[in-house]
Length: 439
Image (cartoon, rainbow, N blue to C red; front, side, top):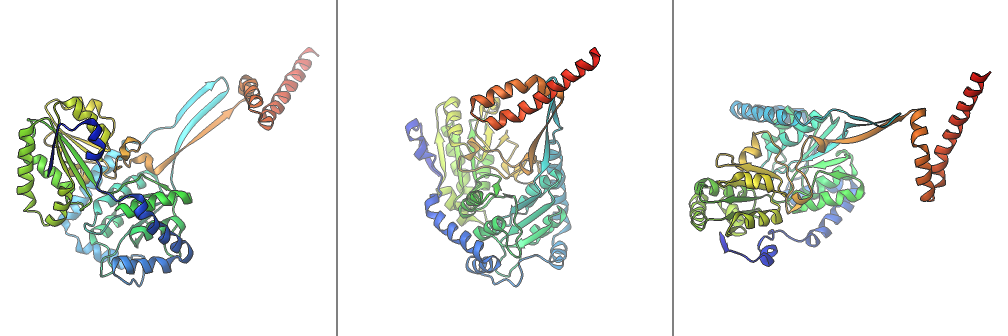
């Protein structure tokens, strides 16, 4: 791994740069495929599936028979593990439910806010170098808790035209309404425009490579919402002399094996620990079946020594990691002051892989510095807030003149008239009532 000592703050930008292609290098390809899918629907999707995935599909929708065969092929032991993970994820996301927020802002003016589910959602599940059935749990569980009516899952087929058994089993277990064998840019385009087979959705979720990330961002130009820009995985560990070098190395490698474009970083106040971690990485990587891919990611990664924790914190907030592990004596310093991170893991016995699978938090997180502005997927990601208000006669009398003055100042006469007409009627009504009482 590349070692750097006490880098100047002016050099942090270059030092912390992600090993990703620029959007300009990808955007032309994404636009071309989007236009093709918009014009030709399924025909275009099948063409690009054959081109990129190397398989000519007879049908894109996964059949009930395929789901049954997939379920029978998954071991009972793994099924139990998936079910336990599902239970923990459900527990954490159910706890995120909020009640109606209601308040009387002024006498006679009741305002409230309620959550409603997004009715149609599309879930993208990567299936290339690693079939991420764990992501199925992370997306379908909150979608169901939120009450989404249509949950469409897209995942790329292998050379035999199949989706991984574990993905199909988990999708069926979690109540996905339709499973479709399509991946990459063409899957995002299908969910954006809708085709003969792929339903159009209102919001698209899920991680993917850089092409999928740019495709999701393009989808927003056509009125489809996305969870966040989520590209290649990344991890930053901060550690001092109290950290276990073997554990730290294993955490770095756990993210490195996601893909050659993943990035892992260690920021440390201990030179000795840095050297120990570097040695452990070299030792542990030799035992990994995905050594070639992991090595490419490690080549893009950094070991950075800084003199104190204040500098470390500033650097970490600047980097804004997707995953952030704290292995320091004073862990509260980082817990209390971290501003930019997707998900935080605290202590020597909290590996990042716990969050990836079974602790209960969601592993669909913002990458590439987007944690400065985006949250990871949560229950609210599958809902939208609708505000309501009801104003009584007393209420409109109390606030009416304020609205009239503001509308007139903005030059919006119709806005003013909508209030003035009501006020005149109410004033007239009050006058009539007074006259009746006098008589």
